[in-house]
Structures are given as structure tokens and as C-alpha cells.
Image 1 (cartoon, one colour):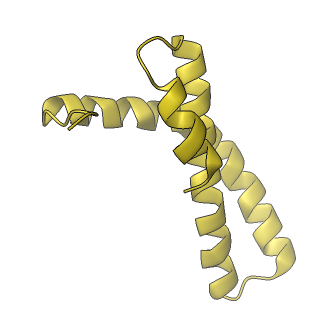
Image 2: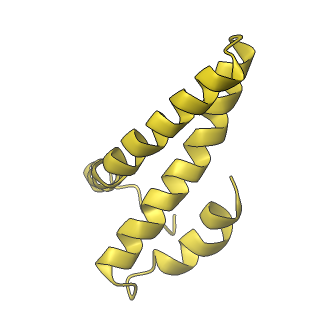
Length: 87
């Protein structure tokens, strides 16, 4: 997944991390994971470089805004279905 998701995220997502720091790291991990996948899909679909750059730039904005709400939704689902981090 990348350095942020595998290296920084577990360290910062501990209970001791401030909520703002947890939110920022979660958002960065979400964006850095999604953007390369989106880039690859666009390239495989035959988009031009300009189309890819425009779409990825737009996606970064949308993913940045939606990252925290999506993370909260995932936390709610984990609690709902009793999925524990150390399981």
C-alpha cells in the first residue's frame, strides 16, 4: 500500500495520537492509496495524459474532502460488526 499506510499509519493510529493527527494521516493514506489506482484505470481506459492529469487533480480534491467521513464510516462499521484492530 505504500509507506504511509504500512509505516506511519499503524504508529499514528494508536489511541495516544491526537484526533487531528489521526484524521490527517488517515486522509493522506486514503489519497495516496486511491490515486495510483485511479491513474492506472484511466491509463488502461485510453485517456490522454491531459485527461489523466485533470481527472487525478480533481480526484485528489474529492478524496481529500471525503477521506475523513469515509474513515469514520469504516470505524462505525468495525464497531457494528465487532471487528477489532488486534484480532
